[in-house]
Image 1 (cartoon, each protein chain N blue to C red):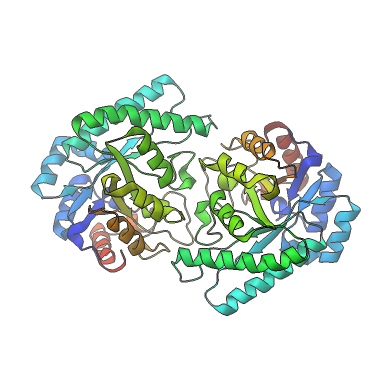
Image 2: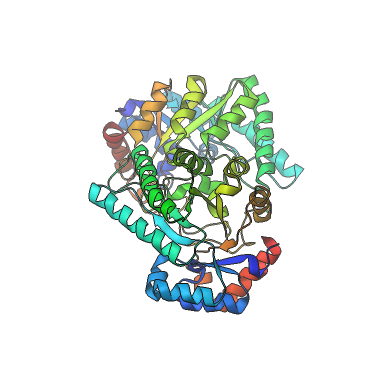
Length: 274
Length: 274
């Protein structure tokens, strides 16, 4: 089971409690080996200052959250998304991230055209990839759970993400999050298809029963129904050797707790049930 | 666009307002051509009485909801599920249903073994199918949205449902519900794979943005983001000629409204946006 030095704290896990500098110091204090910032907290801290602090504390960066959100209702919106993704690539480079995580976006406002959204996503990733390749930053498509297809990501299976990777070539892979993908009967086969080169990130939390909110009711590992060790074994058997990134959106539970207690719990659960 | 005579009222759409006899009379009053009872209301009414009323009012029965819920923690639980499904087949025959809809069940209490749940489901459908074939009642596997994988159905894609149909042979097909399947990039291909023989039911409602509850916040057709006419065209191009069944779970909206208004809205929306 993963010990603290193999764990990455996705800062969303304590996002209501801590700034990015507090997260960095907290990881160092708890012996957590890596961090995954979100861009809002990164900008709040200042990118250069964050890069310096992360280096000073000897943390790895398992990924930057997030680029993506490509589909838009008009050309100006699509261009704004491309500009934003180019900036995200630069920020990921600045902090030495292992990858830029892409949450690709859903249907543009007023649209019911899912096929067009898929096209816009593939086009947007392709254009961002041209730049990301030139600066050596891998892009990680994160398929989100199908319940986010309308408003957050119209890529909802690893199969679909890998179809896009196949079409676009080198420099783009996937982020496997057990919360989004645990239900998929094809999961093992698609992880094997991805292979070590394209398995860029591995995110864990748990699926609670019942789940009371579509976005903000994710569980701590061990509190839900996902067989996390099994899925971890599959990604590791297929060559993933990166950090185990813990990302928990939990408005009514973990976001209300003492963040040092949250980090201690994360470590204890990673050692015991991940 | 479908007129009232091609519409089926799934009684869940007005389940807090009306008994089954009231639903039957309501359909007749509004010119709705078919009905899909749930078993709790069927038993409450009495199966023979319901069958008589449905016949007297000249309604078709697009399906009976529902059999399934096969996985269980022990042999006694599995046998109880099989007994219940045999009774459901008899009830479906008694009311002349076009099919018995199967919501197959999720993880047994305390289990995280999804592969075992899949095995239990296939075994349970197979055993139920032996009996269903002998009385000529088609079984319709309804893949549910992946957000129900843990607690309602571990079959969440049309591909998976059809893999099971392939394994089991004649007498079992699928119920295509746009709410559960609209997000799937493989949907058109899998509907074509199903073909006319296995497209046993077609259910509509809409996916609201935002969705505030995982179970009870489904939308009236036209109020969400699903391109229903497109999906209807795909099932009909592939040979589906049955009723358009409207099934809306809506605790805070449609379940609070005058049921005659709900039925009038269903008909108007089917004519305009389905």
